Length: 428
Ligand SMILES: Cc1cc2nc3c(=O)[nH]c(=O)nc-3n(C[C@H](O)[C@H](O)[C@H](O)COP(=O)(O)OP(=O)(O)OC[C@H]3O[C@@H](n4cnc5c(N)ncnc54)[C@H](O)[C@@H]3O)c2cc1C
Image (tube, rainbow, N blue to C red):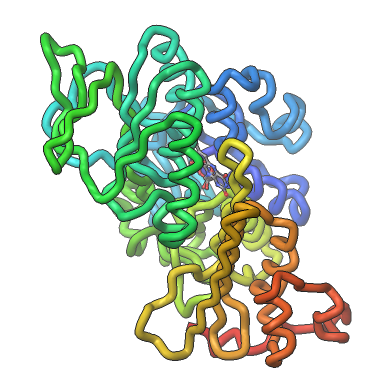
């Protein structure tokens, strides 16, 4: 059996490990357009901040590829896939045949049309190379504007600030971390960033990057504010890198559509990670949930299925755990339910004195989402209630609201080998 994996991120790593559980002999080829073996992508912010060196980025040791009999082609980009002939062709013209193909191409940073965007001094922040380029720039500049207050934007902002660069963050939404957080949690994070010395501008967009003789002078915002800057980091989102799949006739919606076996529309083709639109644990249908644990799990299940071990992926769960200058935060599941849907009940508790915030979202008798700030001790337990869809009576619900979740509240038969989550189809 010939396995071909396009992309060498954590989904690819999961796939190698998934394949080798079942098939120790098949030939695995991995093609990556990056110059380095799999690394911890979230770690690039620590690299930029100067907190870790390059030597700490690797996810597996040097022997990993050899031990798993993987032919790794670095600095090689797949330019086309032919699903009928079952081949992929690299930009250099090399033709790679496959029996099973995994597309694990991740995401590409989205760049909006904006005057002044083209030219030097504008950066993305999703790869090792981006982090290195930004670290080099940070040594020479004083002011930066980060466009985008999502996870990647905030991580870039924090790391640049740690390097001594004055940073302003511009966010179109009314709050930072708009996808994962609600208004109150976003406001608490903004306040923390403000206290540290980062400037946060919400409800406003970057209209134009102003330059003089090609050199960046600053960013003009939609409300007329002008923010001086030497460099600009554009971090307004990552879109699934679906072009290859689309061109090959593989069905693509927001991402490459895959079933519970991570199989795409064409025979022998699978997709996993940030590029895939896969079944979701809480919602009906498939969603792109571009986070690390989902990428590994999807890769792992894709690998098992590619090797012939029919294994069902139970669906991903949106989940983020990040710390901003000592403020620990966690967001899991559905945290911004539709306001006018009577099936949802939202409880939020702010303790200004302790600097904590807890928001729980219930759907009927289940916990479907939570946001924790400041005190995240119960995060694992709350995640368990969400992941396993435990039904809650009034007393149990109140305990969760009071911040007292306990493993003793889990169903007695949970640890039985044949335990099954209930009500999966009943949730929105
Ligand atoms: C700064 C930052 C911080 C993050 N922090 C968190 C966090 O705290 N928690 C969390 O859960 N997630 C976090 N993430 C997201 C997480 O890193 C991703 O969800 C995960 O890396 C996705 O893995 P993947 O394997 O699907 O794709 P990727 O890691 O993006 O790998 C895809 C690879 O495919 C390569 N490729 C693409 N096209 C081709 C081609 N045609 N030919 C060859 N190679 C190709 C790409 O160059 C890339 O190397 C963060 C991401 C960033 C950038």
